Image (cartoon, rainbow, N blue to C red; front, side):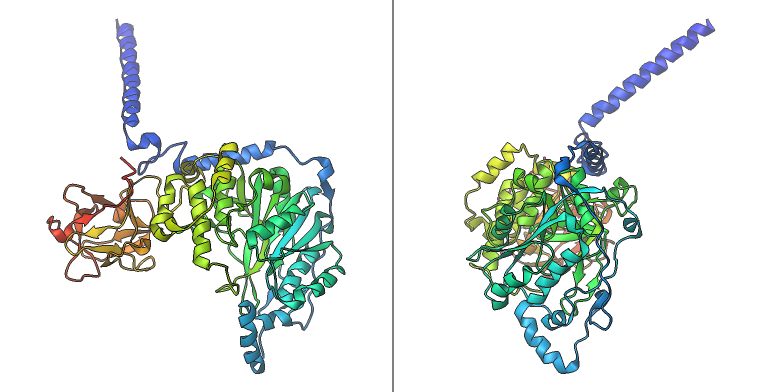
Length: 588
């Protein structure tokens, strides 16, 4: 009798557990978390956890990629360390001090290339640099057989010393067996020293250096395509014309491509001061991203990427986007994946176009922390752009948005309404490429590669937020994180007056969200953290109020016409905010 009761109890408990599990699964199927995109959801397939799983899958699969044919690999010997030239300015990457009696000469020469040309002329073409690598990198052992590379450098009116120092740093700090050639592409330079004098000089160098000329101004994209067309190495390495390669820069790049020919790899880009030519080591804890305007930006590497690398900062870093100036790619894969978009003009946007294409079409994009190359960064460009910079940049970015970003192209157009009227040319070849390569969607990219992106996965509204009483619009006023939100006349030109109301209850403008720390405190623009709290808002479509969740107070346009505040919710006209524009309410 007792045994029977115990058996019956076990059956009842087991049945209850089964029904309990079924109830949970049923409820989950109707929740936001079923698709992994609701706030606070944990899902193996999407969001940050999905991104971690995807990254680990890439790491596992890289062990099984087809290796390079033996005929394409060469044995190599490590390059010797460049000795210090005692008494020479700038040695070991130190800043150059200009004598006071030459300050005027410095100012005049600065105008030519928008960097301290006098300082560059004082530095040796073979100057020594510090070994800036992490300690783990110095002890790494790379395969004894690696593919060769052709280094392609495009220049237009480049200074003699910066161009030659770039070339000498490649020759001095690369295993000679691995550098097939250096290809210089002159994009219609007008300076005399870049003509026959340059051709005569490079003939004396220990590595083959070829000079190609576009004839007419073609821009970076088409000039690089010309250089790539003549490349003989198994790998193409693109560099700018004002760089300095450091010790051990090349082997890590080629080693990663040898493991996975679909890996597109970038060095850590260090800073060479445009004022003093001091070599300044950049952080290896940043990766590439972009904002709503499709401007490339550096952001801090998230913890999930550190976890994927098991905390080892010397391991390759998966980056959502690349700066585009300096990278290596397998030559055959460069063409398989679509090289460059030849419909783009001059310069700008090609880095994001390639970044999206690489990831969405089955490749990987990596920063290699053990490879460092210095680059002279300038405050402004010394070059002119046919048709104007804005027209070219808008055209190129619009081509990126139309081909690769699906409905998220609206974020770019909302920030740059004028781009809708720019002639962007025929997109059919690039769209066909996307179809032929069976590339994934931009949603997939945001979910798996860049869940930290400033572009929300799901949003209810995108456009201007207008106050019903004053007809003024919320406006960032171009302010930075930590500064107060503003209000101004609704101009309809996008930019600072574009906000998204997201499924995570954020009111965001690019990478900043509306944030209120106290009931009486100001409403500020604060970097979006995705954790709700001070950044959670509820918009009521019926009474048009925008209520702050933590304080239960409403956003109000008070007596100060330029600064909205939080006040008790009354439903009056100064608390009514209109979210009406041509974009659909994307999330339901």
